[in-house]
Image (cartoon, rainbow, N blue to C red; front, side, top):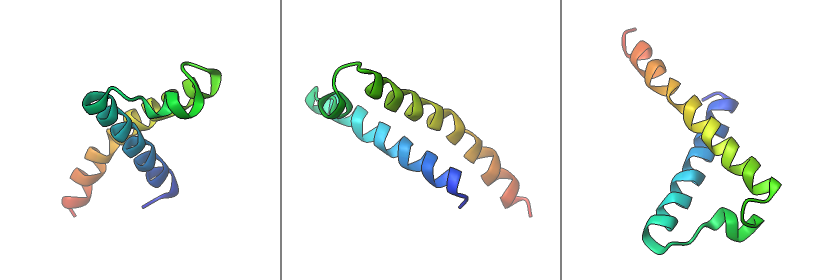
Amino acid sequence: MKALDTIALILVIIGAVNWGLIGFFQFDLVAALFGTMTGFSRIIYSLVGIAGLYAISFFAKDRYSSMD
């Protein structure tokens, strides 16, 4: 795995855990750690969103690698 793929995957997992906590317990971990919509928490949310969009490319990588 490339370094960027690993970082994106970690951020996507963080986002998934945060959404799970929100869904099950109404607890926003990012807001609890960094404050509600502070500059830093907005950066975290933005990075997680960008990582999610980048992770879409994993589907194409898997498709093309299975054709070999």
